[in-house]
Length: 80
Image (cartoon, rainbow, N blue to C red):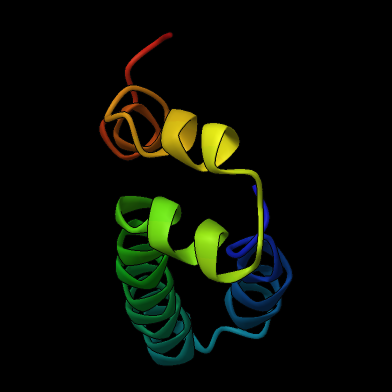
């Protein structure tokens, strides 16, 4: 939920209008956007400690988020 929610409206309209080619184009565009955003978020999560320290966050908090437990578990979808 979130990034791809507009796809429901766009694909529904394309399907209803019989424009099946546009339906495919909307799907492909959405997959590209979601992939790009996912890579950017993965890079940010992998580098949370330097980012938090640069933002003058407490080092104990920055260390917790970079301990490999919290940030990488989000990327790998592991339950904490």
